[in-house]
Amino acid sequence: MTMRRCEKRMLLAEPRAPRTLPCSVEREAALRQPGHRDDVAVTVEKALELIGTGDSVQDAVTEALDRARMTLEGITGFEVVRISGTVDDATTEYRVELRVWFVLRERMHG
Image (cartoon, rainbow, N blue to C red; front, side, top):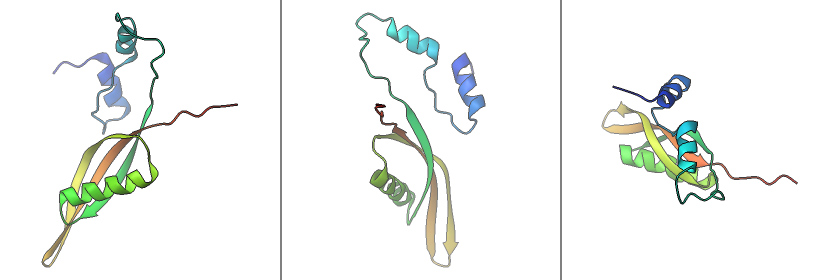
């Protein structure tokens, strides 16, 4: 499998995050494309790891995302990192670890 140099750096910097982001060379090339506007806002995203539990995997994911939406604005995506669960006699509870990305808000200094 051939990987771009930027992807290798991302994987070495954070081995659990296979998410590929454009490197600075690719961003600069995009800026030079015809029709690119210089006034386009640049965003920065942050990732948090959350754990949700529920009667199904979907319930666990939904619970984690619903709780995150209570305090975070600008959630852009998520990745299921790990699924596990517990069995107690006739009941099963699923535990889902998520990585959630959201956009950091700009703060004006003044």
